[in-house]
Length: 353
Image (cartoon, rainbow, N blue to C red; front, side, top):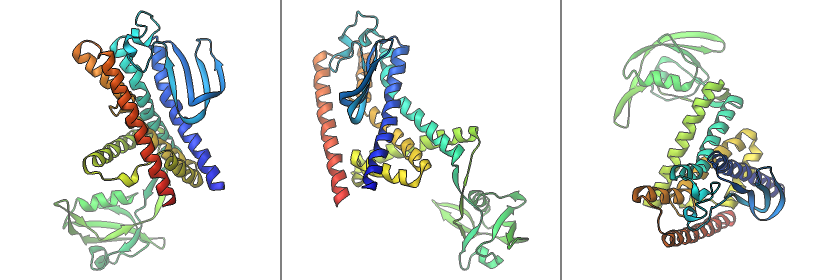
C-alpha cells in the first residue's frame, strides 16, 4: 500500500509539473501574440476546481490527471486556421509565424524545464564524481610494476594536479608508451615515482594504459554558471539519446521492452521518490525531455503534426484543405489511441510478468 501511494503521489507530482509547464508555454506565447485564451486545464473531464481571471481565462483542475490543455479562441481540431479569422483575438487570425510559435512553445518549455531542473540538481545535490583513488590494480600492468596499490590516491601527474579519475584517465590516455612522474598518497604520506605507461587500442586509436580502476564516488556541487552549462549539456545528451532510441525502435525494432506509459511512469516515479528529491527531480527532467520530443513527432493531433501543417502551408502559400486536415487529424488521433493502449498493455504485462 505504501509503494502504491508513493507511486501515485510521484506520478501526480511529476506529470502535474510537466503538463503545467508545457501548457504554460502555449499559454504565455499565445497571450504574447494576442490570442485570447479561453481555458487552461490541468487534467481532463469534469472540473474539480475552477476560477476565471480578469482576462476571461477559466483556470481548471479536472478529474482525470493524465494531461491538460489550453483552449484558445478560434482554435478548432479541424481547420483551425479558417476558424474566426476575422476576430483579432482568434488563433486563426494570426500570421503563420505566430501560430507556429504558439504551438512550438509547449515542447520548448519542456526543454527549458529540463535545463532548469538538471542545473538545480547539479548546483545543490552536485554531480557524481569518481575520485582518483585506486580501487583495483590489474596484474602485470604498469601500475602493478610500479608498486601502486588499492587505496592509493593520485594527487598529480607530470606536475599537473589531479582531482578526479577522469583527469587521471585523460593524462594517461595522452601518453601511450610515455614516461610520467606520478605523486600519490598512501596512509597519509605522499610518495613520488616515475613509470612507463603501456598502450591500449580503443576504437582503433592507441592510448596510454596504467592498469588501474577507480570506484570511489562523491557528489560535488557546481557553481551556478557551471551548473547551467552542465544542465544544457546533459539536456542535449538526453535529447540525442532519446532520438537515437526512437530511431532504433523504428528502424530496427530495438527497445520495445523499454517503452512505458502511465503505469511505468508511476512506478518509476515512486522509486525516485523513495531515493530522494534529487533522483525525483532528475527523473522529472529526463521525462520533460521525452515529453518535449514526443510532442514534436509529426503526427497530427500532436504539436509536431500542427507544425507539419504549417510547414505545408508555408510551402504552398495557403492552408491545407479543411478535409485534408480533418482526415489527417482523425488518423493521428486513432494512431495515438492505439499507441496509448499498446504502452498501457505493455506496462501491465511488465508489472505482472
